[in-house]
Length: 205
Image (tube, rainbow, N blue to C red):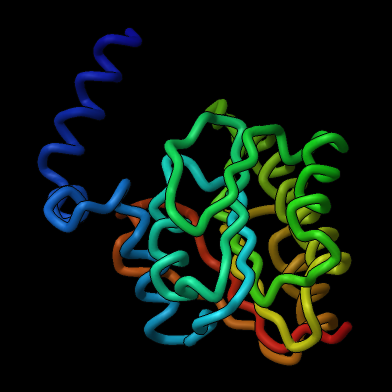
């Protein structure tokens, strides 16, 4: 069963035009085009900015963000999985739900606050929505907690969410903490995928 699933995934990847574009452009994954569209529409990143990228591996978002913030900026990339190094990026391999990983993020910030927090995190999906949705919302809540601690005044945040229980309540909480909250469904999101990106601007410290 696992080999059949892997075969189907490889076939889908081979047919996916976004995967082909990513490979042609030297990007680490097709996810680049989701962040690129959000940046084009919302202009969240700027040269010199400090960015935290959660759920970063294999690194396409960090790769793109590092290019936008340039040499004067920096990206802190966090993931449970290993990630190949990138110029201008500090890679932290660890579980974001562990206190030890949070301490490493704090150490990397070195007293500074981020201008943008990105989260493309998703739990390991079991296929059971009653299990997967609470796990997803828990990651979103932890990201918002980090934003409350580490985001600069008027900073921005992007979080991947999945439609379901707790979604509307979380959006409402974010509206209370940011001056502007929008929901984006990038063109590169796969058909039938429940993912949505919450884009929040102007953090009220």
